[in-house]
Image (cartoon, rainbow, N blue to C red; front, top):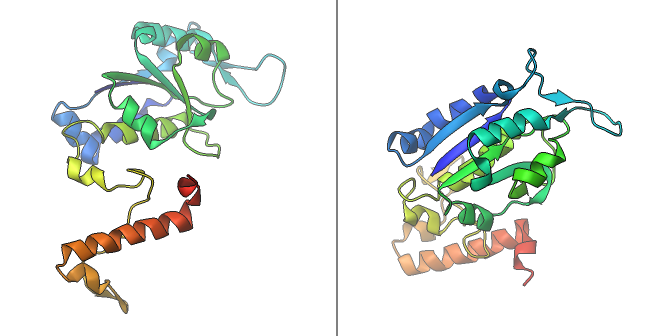
Length: 222
């Protein structure tokens, strides 16, 4: 899997690929990445990448020219391009699973009021929203998308670890406990230390349903 990320602040993105599980995936050659600084593709001597919106209004908009130059430099029209934005469709685990099947993904990190609509029209395959809220950093939302995808790639995480996670099926994940068996007067449920794997599985399924009912009843609507 290859990721190409367009950003005004590449230093925000760089550290993610050099830490934790991602760093190991990169070292193993399972994941490749390239970060393009949008400013490197600006025309003027000041490397200006934003301007006032036509029609007026607060804030600035990322200009089409440097974005198009950056995208053309990596032949983006022949790749899968994702633009995280609050006005996109709701990003889901199913979308992550679908994108994980691609060989290369391009992400555009928005800033300010967003990017020129003509870039979306010409290049973007998926406008996605990571939640019903607004953040100022397209880098952070792009990294959320990347993190949800790369962990699904073969060899990054064991398949067993992925099977019982939240959104695998319609339920959320069950509660987890580890040592010590008692912490500040709170004890691990006896069933988990019983060694009865059938009973443990039943308990976990029950807790998955209860947690989903309490936290995300919308997942049970059907």
